Length: 151
Image 1: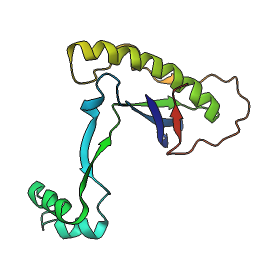
Image 2: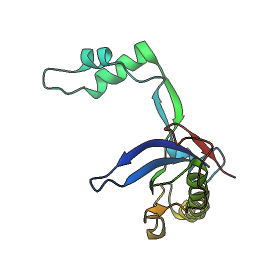
Image 3: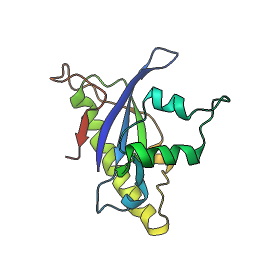
């Protein structure tokens, strides 16, 4: 299992959060359910405008035909869970919280795999995680796209 920083956000109260997406790896329970067929790249704005009708909608058949002809498809891993971490001070701080969450998710995925092909989080995973403040300064900046691998 691995995690990737998706974005940083600030809520209406001015509190900072980091969104982290969690991905399963081949061989892990439920992995096949989160590996899906997707276009090999995102469509450009120009391509989307060609496919958009006057009502602003895109026909599923037209979209699939366009991707078949011009872009192609590939199997891609998709996040099975995302979590918002409250105000982590450093990347190391965030990594500690992510490692703790990975342990919980692994346990939950194993249990889910016994009865379902889909991840169903339990209430223990729902509260926002507040990172510990034992790091005063970090060596890396928290940036979207940073991967945090399992320790």
